[in-house]
Image (cartoon, rainbow over all chains, first blue to last red; front, top):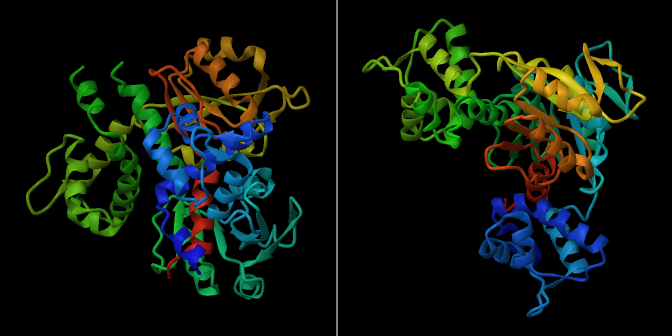
Length: 214
Length: 214
């Protein structure tokens, strides 16, 4: 449990930066580099060097003075901190255009995530296969999530149905919700929620093109 | 220019919260409410009430003591601050599964955003219509963005091609980039970039299910 305790101490902003480091390190490894310093990474990624030094120190592998971290070990340690070294299965609810895109997206392989099962309430698409995954009726959600011990629920339903789907996923035992519906979900504290709200980033863009100071 | 100056003072975290307020206020208006207080909104949305008071004060309309803000005016003022009261056109580059999903997503109507034109380098899909939008070759990107004065470029190409697409969009005159490719883009300071990096939010989820303290 020592490892688990240490990993649980890593702050969320650091966790959010780890995928960015990981990509940069992998690109360097592919380019033939064996050692990587936090200072070089910080400069390349536009991060504060002090911040990057702390971020990388948290994965708990020793760096070498002047040379930096052994690149392969650093990748493994970051993947481990992210939980990406073991396969994870997710269930997706809502097979509209966004749900289909996520099912067809092959960018999750690096993260060892597979969307193992899909649910929708629309009888017209139930039993269809979307990118190899069979769409199941909502009535089967609870039993399947329990049986396969699925821990991540992905919500891509319209906002008006999102809380209800979330409640079903939580009741069935998921520990984390990835919410693409534009609504704030209520969940027990033990359930981690990450929102991908396209309207929020669009807000920054449309504000800037209309009112930019430059 | 007085309005533009005032709007440009609104900090980005406030801008990112405005879509969340806007949805909550619209739901209340639909439910028959005419006045809305920042304290009620803050409690409903889980925000600090002091923060919400400041956020809403920045749109520059007067609230009434004990009653709050007139709901219709507040909606209009927030939409105006976001630049959502006037139509905006965007161009999308990369018509893979994510590009198609965004073209088919009807959630941008509220934001007055239309994806007016689409580009891809794959000859097999050029001239196809995807959700009513014709896919054009990359060679036409510059001329079309200039002619229609398109201000937002959406990048949904693989990471390896993203910087090149970004450079072409910026050279053609877009002022804002919505980047879905998992890479940090280099742009001139005058260009606003918003990244939607699915790996970053997935990182938080997979870390939490593996190392949660509870």
